[in-house]
Amino acid sequence: MSHDTANRAVRNVFFSGIRLSVSMGSTICTSAIVARTLGPANMGVYGYAMWLVGTLGILANIGLPAALTKYISEYVGRGDTVTAAQLGKRLLFMQLALAAGVSGLTACFVFIRSPYRSVIGLAAVMLFAQALQQSLGAALAGVQRFDRMALISIYVALASLASIGVAAVLHAGVMGMLWATLAGLSVTIWLYYRAVDEFLLKLSPRPPNPSPPAPDIFRRIRKFSLTISYILLLDAIVWQRSEVLFLKWYSTLPQIAFYTLAYSIASKLSDVASTFSSTLLPIYSESYGRSGLRDVRPVFENALKYLQMLMVPLCLLGVAIAKPMVQLIYGQNFLPLVLPLQFLILTQAFTSTGVVQSPLVVGTEKQSFIAKWGTVVAALNIALDLILIPRQGALGAAAANCIAQFIGVLGGTFYTIRLVGISFPWKTTGTIYAAAAIALAPVAYLGNRTHSGIAVLVAFLAVGTLLYLGLLVVAGQFGRRDLGVLKQALLTKVYPAEPLEVV
Image (cartoon, helix red, strand yellow):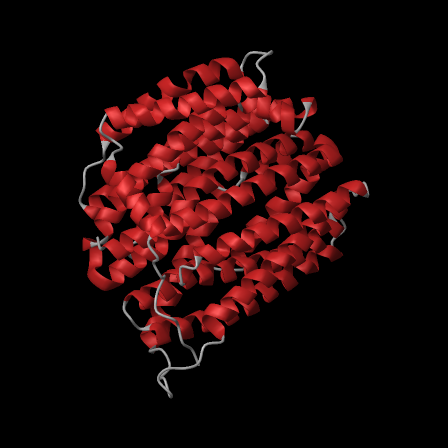
């Protein structure tokens, strides 16, 4: 793996980490405001509306965001920046038209008699905005401008907090909170468009009369996008709260609220892992386009190691402090979400490795495996939903989700290590789990004591962090080489690619 590729990967993760930290803080604050303003029952309606937007959004993009990131970065890696830019522009126009069509069809459901007619109408607008925002962000990821994405996240966080805060002050109901959420999403679209316009759409052409992309490129993109679209549909079942639909059928609105809030918090933790995914897809695609699997293998090995170093202690910490955190942020009325939250967070210690595996499979165009294996896992997930949710509500939903995710990632792990030709790093993984458990044991003990103050927890957490790093150093899993990689990547100026030029 070249120094430039390694440096770019670490810098991308660094800037994505900044973006994630801002987004996580903003999400926790806004969800706390919404939950405390609406209460468990109305929060269930709000959560159902947001689930509807996310699920229907899959139909509004059919895999185009992933195609934007993959093919822009792949052709940049080949040195064909003109084709990369032309493809990006064409795919963005396709996304705009498709999202408008799906939103229009969704809006037709407002004519059906239902207590949620107004919610469905607003959801139609929101899913159009969400699809557009995802594609613009994917285009920016394709040119690897994660530094700009980090800056945008700060403005978006401020806008979202302001709009939700105003709605809370005005004692807005569910519709008011949804309008406030849409306002924040609109700011995101505007800022992403300005960045994409600067880095992709307004550049002068080179050569003077560039030829259009060959038809076989679009055949590849069409096949890729359709497969990814099916995978996203499976993803909506296994990874993105299909349980909400079953909770609506077999349980109560408060149970929907408890599960959606637990899932929202856990998903913010999974977004930490997704920092690797969003930055690795363009790196994998660029490396694969340049030299096949030769440069992909070391990127995968290092990403798997560093991901576990980060995620395992975070997940164990999340389980330890879940109860005091929920009580502090959401209040006593939302304590029933603690156990589902702990289930979801603990499972992520292992399932988070999927964000290193999936972009590799997609970046090397082996995504048909995800579609086949995902179909089996999705069927299992639905069966578990039907068995567990009617009896256990939010807790059953969390258990069904966790079991399906675990089996899905386990199968993906066996496939990926065989694809790249390596052995799974059992020794490294065992060392990381042991070090994290030892270092965080005092924090777990204090987190479940009634009279443990925040200051005491923070102090023990700081000590636990140092102990964890020390144990990794002693075990030989973190040393000068790792520090050298981080130092060189973060202090050396690395440009994402040559400037793109389009017609």
